[in-house]
Length: 272
Image (cartoon, rainbow, N blue to C red; front, side, top):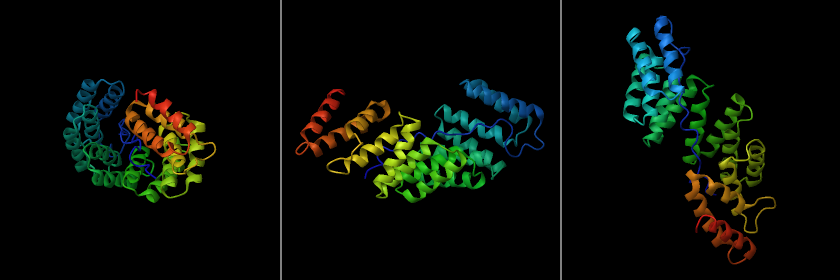
C-alpha cells in the first residue's frame, strides 16, 4: 500500500518556545528570565520583532542563556530563515549540549532543509534527553513513516499515546503503519477510533481509502470515493487526492460501473 507519498506532515512544525523554565537557568539574572518570558509571549502573538528584541536583551544580561538563544532560532524559523535558525540553535547547544528542546527545534530545521537523516538523529536525541517532548516524538514518527520504518514509527506512536492518551495523530500513524504492514482490518479499526474523535482527520481518511482500494471488490463500510474526495478537498492535499481518484477510477472502470460513475462525479467537482 502507498501510505507514504501523501503522508501528511503536520507534526514537523512543533518547535518549542521556552518560558524561562527550561534547563540551565541557575545563575541567570531575573531580568533575563523576565525578558525571555516577554519574548515568548510576543512570539505567541506573532510579533517577531518584539520577540527577537526581548531575547537579544536577555542575552545581553546573560550571553550563556541557552533558552533565549534557542528561542532566537524559533524566531528565525518563523521567518523562514533556516540558516539563521540553525546558527542560533547550534549556539544554544554549545552552551548546553543536553538541551532537549534545542535538539528538537534543530530537527525542524533539518526537515525544512530536506536533511531527513540529520532530522531523525536530532529528534532521537531530543526524545532521549526528554521522553516527554511531544513535538519531537511526533516528528520522529513522521520521519520513520516516510522512511518506510513502519515498525519503528508504530512503536513511537504507541509511546506517544502513553504521554498524550487519545492523541488522534498518534492513532492515525498507527493506522498507517498497520496498513503498510499488511494488517488492513487493524488499520481500519484505528481509523475508526481517530474519526470518532476527529471526523476531519485527513490521514485517517487517506488510510481508509488506501485500504479500500487494496481490495478489488471493496470493503463493506469503507467508502473509497468519499474518503478520497475528503482528502482532495483539503487544499494542501488536493493534488494527491485527485490523482488517487483518477487511479481508483481506472481500477473500477471495467467491473464496477456504479462506482466508476461516482468517481467521475467526484472528479467533476474538481473540474476534472
